[in-house]
Length: 255
Image 1: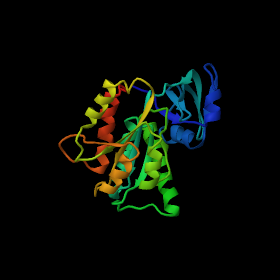
Image 2 (image 1 turned 45 degrees about the vertical axis):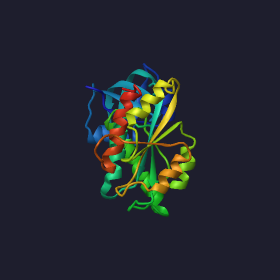
Image 3 (image 1 turned 90 degrees about the vertical axis):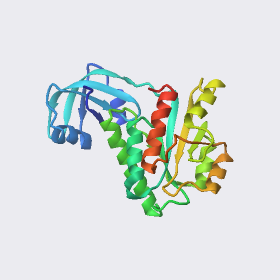
Image 4 (image 1 turned 135 degrees about the vertical axis):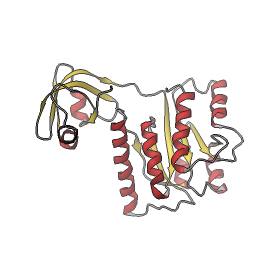
């Protein structure tokens, strides 16, 4: 069984070394000591959220703190190919379901997208509140899945900002039911031309329940995006992104 994982302050985690003692406090310490009721002798991991991981055995449990003797410390390797999910805002919490599953599947960053046909809107103060909710969501999902890397959450983007951002990404794939090639076809074509030999980033764009408009698709294609389909069926906004990530994890040999 894998060790439970908690997140600690990066400045403290990064200086810890095997043979030393690390004290985890704050919300994470309270969760370990009070909610999980971990006890002396149990193994745990602590990460800074950026890939540095400590492993150790609990030697003391206090009021809202645990103390562990460190036996391992080091940086987990980052994947050669980074994956980003661009998720259109969706009603009924379907966007949050997608982001949570994507985090568990190893996505490296998520981008909230105000697509034309989105019913849900983040405006004014609601934009940052919505982003912070996703920040908390990816942190919790990372902890549950024992990930030492917590995905970054970009500010919400409209299509114009998304297109400008997409121009800086190596590959952008828009999931679309009318695409003339599958996602697997797109990756196979890159592999055949040697396009997967070096480190790269791939963004997967998922539209809202109402679909991606022709104007949006053309705007993204203008900066180099390609459209792709997943299979013969139309998936919901909550499942399309995670399904694509499973396939990409395999095709890009991240798994």
